[in-house]
Amino acid sequence: MSFISASLPILKKNLSQYFILAFLFSMLIQIWPAAFTLPFRFVIRIAICNALLLLSAAAVYRYFVGKLFSLLLTIALTLNFAISFCTWRIYQSEFSSVFAMSILTTHFSEVTSMSGLFTYDIPIIALYFIVTLMAIRYLAENTSTTTQRVGMSLLAVFFVWYTSASWLKQRKDLEVYYPLSSRVLANTPFYVASEFIIAVRDSKLAEQIYKADLHYPALTVSDTGIENYVVIVGESARRSNMQLYGFGLDTTPVASTFRQNALVFEHAIAPASATVLAVPMILSKADPDNFTANELADNILRVANEAGFYTEWISAQGNSGKSNNYVVAIASLSQKAQWINTNYDEELLPALDKALTVAGRKLIVLHINGSHEMACIRYPASADYFHTQDKYEDCYNNAIRYTDHVIGEVVKRLNNSASTLLYFSDHGLEKNPSLESHYMHGSRNPSKEAYDVPQFIWYSPSALASKPRRLGTVEERYSTAHNYELMISLMGITTGVSHCESPLEACYKPETSFPVMDGGRHIFDYDDLRDTFSSPEKNTRFRKVGKNSL
Image (tube, rainbow, N blue to C red):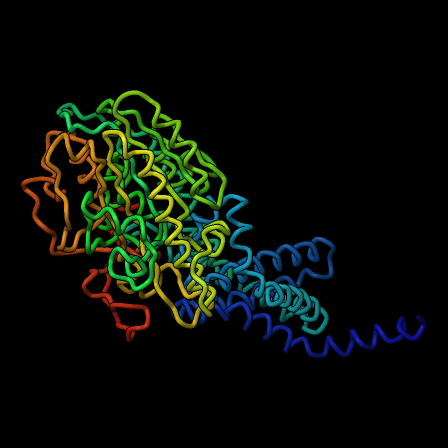
């Protein structure tokens, strides 16, 4: 023991001689994911600010409060690195406000279900924490007081400079999407916090959607011969992985059998590559170029309520608080909304059974987990159908087949009544061969895969017998951003304006332009995107959202 006690001071002294290496190593780890996802000028700014922060912490390290500050600073830096690194490694994308909003609205079961994605990152994150804390201590012991004070002074200059520059830029910008605090933090090692600020701001704006006071004085409802309107909002389903659309595996045995009773959209295109943006646009008048609180407030739940329908929202996706994001804001407008904590979408069926007992016309929305990452946990052991040598390919195709099974169970419940079912996926997924789990949300430099989705309308025999319906296929390309108009037509509602975006209307004319939004809220023309993730990368043109967009 005496030998160890005598050796420790020598070991610490020897280690402290390498303070420059610890300092540089800490900085390099911090900018590692940023170097792959952010413009070079931001990487340089982040590195400079990081160095000045570590020097400033070293300047006060000899005090107890300074040690506490250093610990808190290291925790904050580690959190930034952990979130940015995990986002880059899993999604090959920069961290955006969409990811931030998803984190803020994630419930515990979703965290545990996706925890397997982050297991391999824990040692790297722990190493960063240890090295950074060591770097601050060794800087305090091995740099002069003058150097440390210069670091503190330069840090103050850095923040004054970028606060002033950001303020001036904000005054000149036509779009004010980024708050001043977010603009400043984007130049620091806390750039992840910049996106959380936007996400919190967006959550508050979502309350405007919920509280908006809209009325439809010209609204009328005609008899459609249908009593039950069920909408299944799918999740992360690729059209190209469905037998219904020509895929080689038996992934949609149910949907493939009722084509004669359905209208199948052959080329449906989602308006966004993330749920938190796509679903609100699909269910409201909003689109990528008009993503405003007013447009989102005018949604199918609000119209159905006004038209006298009973409305219910049944979700397998999380809700961490009323009106905390756009999806929940819209869902909360229904007369009854419930969030069921489950990985298996079949567990929504008892709630559907109860909702179907309500008398009169009703709109029931099922928001399912579908084939969301991790796909392997989205179906029970009884649905483990495909067994090849590729685990994650099997998992994804099994999840698609399980969704088809759930659709079949819903159809069984509607088959003997005057009912219709609209199914669509919120967005597609990109297939990345270098990713272990293969499939990922489209974010940075997306391809068409991120937006290619399935959609169809099924009618029960009674609904088909009551009135003529459009069946067969919609061959032309169709944006699901027009599903608001489609559902209004389907439900026999008129609001005093034409809904010619709906293929069910006589005045329908196919669109020729398809704007789509990525996770960073850039707007692309769908036609300009590369076909698949594996296609050669293109310097695809994009535009920013309008000045009034959220």
